[in-house]
Image (tube, rainbow, N blue to C red):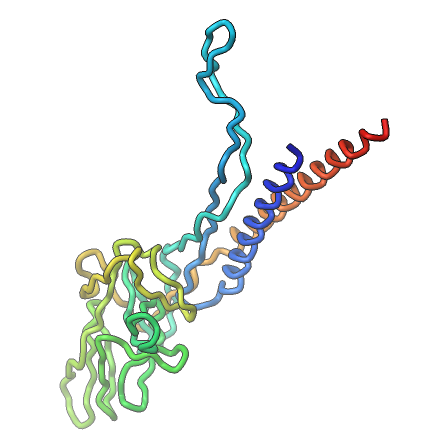
Length: 269
């Protein structure tokens, strides 16, 4: 059985090593705009059934419990924590935070999935074609697209996503577009692309397009950006607990090794 203990402890080391990697990534992105932390979930592996519950003994009595020896643990999944990050006031007209649920949609490389990605990062710019683009990578265009007329001033974005500007030489604001938000039945099923971008999968379901403030979607706040939802204190506590569990699994390996060594020395007696 010492061999079983060695293998079980080895699975624990592998699973905990993955948890350390995930926690380290959370801490590394503590200051990344709109970053969502991940949580590592575990599940136990198969069991050796040495005795079936309910077996009869010589007296015809049923055993109230069986004997099962587990074969270790594995990482079940990494789960996104979609809790709202704090909204920080930047004072910049093209910074837009989402208060509540929903994602912006942007166009990415068409060779990646369906060429669409979703993000909570609302750090927008105006590119050389006067289009609103996300200030990440090469500048991903907002979808549906919004074009800002050149030389326009007093850009405003309402909580419902209506984009208005004051064109040059005019005194009345003009509506130039509508920012839409997208929700998913299972946002934890989204594919993580990096750069705070997510892409739909069969597990996430199809995106549900809504106007901000309608059908359960959040509202937009101009001049704000959503901060990372990583709590460094919680992550450090989780890191310490993982480290201790890692040490305990290492101790299990040492104990199993000592047991095997004792068995190997029996031939000397």
